[in-house]
Length: 181
Image (cartoon, rainbow, N blue to C red):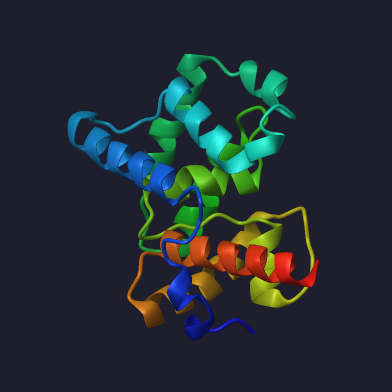
């Protein structure tokens, strides 16, 4: 199992770290001027490009079916969901985002990770493999909650936001995969 010591040196190692930091700063600023908070189609497209990288085009036609109004309404609803039961809040938010065309749990998790990095991380095959030691490519809300618990445990040990611990885990798996190739 991956440990905090395994990833401590990787906090800022990802090549997209500056881009992620810029987006997180943008969303922090938007929270101060948009009430209620929501995301625009343009902002979501930036997140899609960041998360999907070379796979960005794969669901582009499906995502294009979402109107600006749909993006605004769904994201506004997502950020209004607040509960004392964090697992419930998270599950509802992921399901709401997944109602958008071309958005499944991994992309929904990226939206939440960049807008609320203290609480959320991005689920994907690299993180899952690093944390649980086995491959998986499709993820449910239950999978996300399980993964996020492990990432949050490591983040607490490191004193980092959950998103940054997750990014270090992603980089850890990427480095390990390169060495074994």
